[in-house]
Length: 248
Image (cartoon, rainbow, N blue to C red; front, side, top):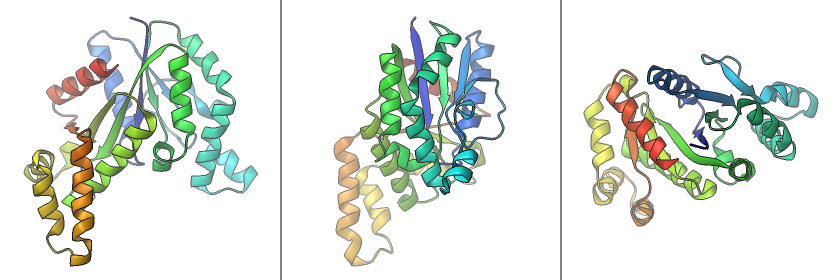
């Protein structure tokens, strides 16, 4: 099989750690062995057993205290430190062994997946370690309550896809918490013209061209599609797992 891995990425609060634990548990019921590696130096508690933890190398709390940095600057420093000390990650992954499937629980700072190169460098190092690698981008479905917020999340997702240059599976998490599932499904199924009309409703005329440009950008790339994840629906979990397996 070889070494396979998935970077679980997305904004803070999108449910990355919960996703990792859920997928690990789901795979175990199918007699598949999965290891979860924590790459979030700001993490505190885990529901899953941690195969390797970046906080053994560097933690956000220590960086903020010693360097006088805030949370955002501290996270960037931590990930750049990991890139400079990538041998630590190589050794930890070698202990997990060959022919294993690994989930990387990544930080929630969106800049790390857009214009800061550290996550791209880490993904390149993992591929040099002979990992077949994909990315799973999580977006909180409770955030996507209307077209502007949905398109904002889609643009952040597209930015991450183009920066990391990996096979991507995009997931709307926490669908079991959405009050109006029909409204969410309508956004997922809407074409660019429909999304633009929703954006234009109540928008000042000065922003109409911007709305049109955003929708055309997403349509031209035609890459951003989301799969809804409902933890109470085994079929939705199976579908996402199958998509990630295919991407890897």
